[in-house]
Length: 295
Image (cartoon, rainbow, N blue to C red):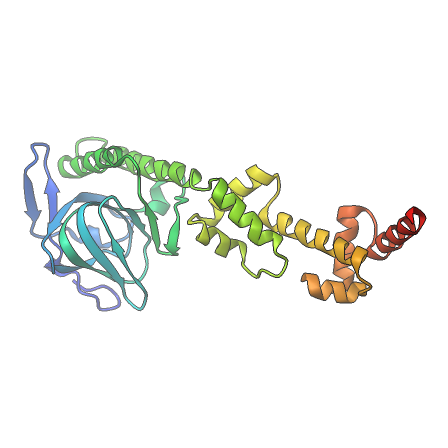
């Protein structure tokens, strides 16, 4: 079977599933519903030798947990990524992708519909908009969840579908907890140092990526630490720099606006008054008057 871009999935994909006795068997074919986003939930374990190549489902969300081996995932018209043992990977729907097995592989996988069934979104570090990656310190807990979902998909007893999505939600939430711990003091200091540099052009999104965090987690943890958003912190640093220029130079407000990265003198004056309760010209005049009296 081919997708809308002509990418052939067909019977190239052999899913190796684990039953409760630890035995494995291969599904010769998958039902048509497997190819339709949102119609089903599938999970299992796949073992492949080095050099094996196979296409991966790209119309739904994919959770992958590498127990052993190495695999490269190559995206159509995009980048490629190599994953190693211990990697917990979340792949969003997107461009077709193909797996290239670099070392004998054992990988646990889940295909699911995030948008229709899950309440909480993943906040994992991302490599790009389609690839999220974690390295859990306690792998056994995630292996247990993957195995439980795989068993549910095999035996399909009453209520299996709803329980399966509850367990997927647990995986995503546990990943979110790991992500939130990622913004340690080192990351905070790094971000604050960049934001204090009024000449730095790094966006908030770029800073989050350099800290290996999603934008949402970076924003929340930064606010918890400094009591303000990264954008507010950056503006505060710029206005402090403006104040230093007013005190130590004779540059005009227009020139200072250009140096400090404000759109124009009017906008600088508006933001300066909001922070200090006085216009830049008034601040300079008061500062020089006080300086003269002190001398």
